[in-house]
Image 1 (cartoon, rainbow, N blue to C red):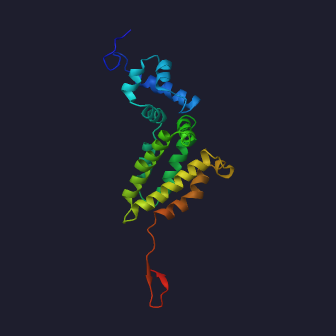
Image 2 (tube, rainbow, N blue to C red; image 1 turned 90 degrees about the vertical axis):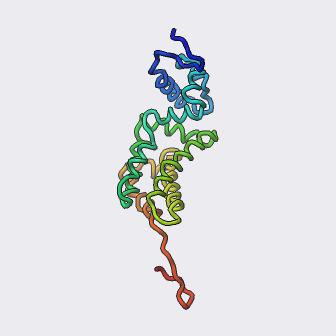
Image 3 (cartoon, one colour; image 1 turned 120 degrees about the horizontal axis):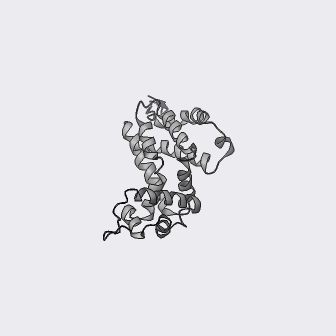
Length: 210
């Protein structure tokens, strides 16, 4: 057996991190976030618990890495945000639905959503991902002092669509094809990106658009 260094890292095992992630992903999917422990992952992976801590630091970080091991939502969003703003809603919806519908890549994401209400760490992960990867990127593409608010409105609708389709599984939405999702919800998403209409007051006190 290979000797460990003082921090618990074994030499000669370049695949150890991937092995830990594979075990963690399987356990999180089977048992949920709350029931899985870093010691349990270590035992199933056949490594010392200190090695899991060395690679990931915390259960929250291990969960985040396991969720994104097969597909990273941040990469999907980054690609979708590139390009013209006119087609942004369609690209974001198309790419996110394709990711969540994928039986391999989408399963850990569904596990994450299912754990949001039961654990603050998971809720923090989902919120941070939404803010950092979607809201901040879109706000940077928009103009005006209200860019962050418009991006927040966009993110709110996207999150609502994901929850409605994949967690609540509202039949009318869950039964939609990916093309139907894009066609149905893209117009409302596009409206959130449009700058608000300014108004001027006439001499009679009536508000008119300018």
